[in-house]
Image (tube, rainbow, N blue to C red; front, side, top):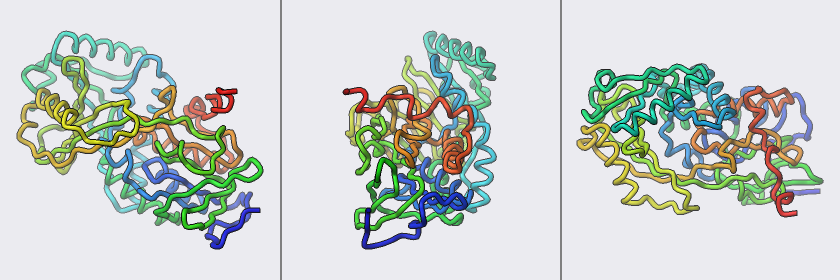
Length: 395
């Protein structure tokens, strides 16, 4: 038996089908969304993270862009992204009501722009991809593109209007989720934990100060830290790795842009996401450099240079933040959402660039799994068990 000098409120008997106890490990957008929805569904919820809301979600641009980010060979990811985008308006409205915080949901769409013949060809290929999936996108001339967004550079040669992409203010979203989760009854603990496994089943977590929290289900939603949580057997460690992203925030851009602009500058992507406050978020790099969390002059310069080429007036804005965080990704760049190889352990991690977009469907899937209901078909392809375990790979 596992004993502890301190017992938490979640030490109810395992197997409580009327009010399941759940320990959520990780307090980013995925963990907080799951905690809120679990608590609203009647579960007793404890969430643990010593850096609550300060990880990749804190740095994100908040784009809800399954259409703009659609790629060849990623049909499963597109399907789940479209489903999550479909439910986002209701998710945002319910969250705003539950928390009293406006999350800055903007259904303004995205405008993809190019600056040379190669960029224009890339936009045509993307339009063809979207057409093959029956998704709306309108090719635009240079004049029509600049009519939509007059601040764009005269060098703009082409555009593609994507009405199906939206955005949200990520930091307001994180605050709202924390408030809504606590109002629904979840307890948020600023602590690190180890997962406790007994007789091949996850039975709860133990904090670094020795407090034990027994749970019917443990949900790992810790982003890049998901693979480093103490207590998990080797064969149950999630296959996640970090991909660094650097992003900048500018102030003083009220009215400069009306929608997200995603551009190619000599083949290099950059995006500019406007906020109601006048902030403009410019991002983001994609660096496979391990856990090197430095903000570098080169990355900041490259982002600013590209943004100024796309929207020249950006040069007059105030640089208020340059930040780096790590996106959690998996071997096939798709999230891990579902049951693990250990009873009582669910995974909701590895969302790479799509954590904010996929938060509603991920939280819904976690709730369904905890309550032993079938998950939405769009999530089935994201099962963690699509990969062999580390033990199987090396055996």
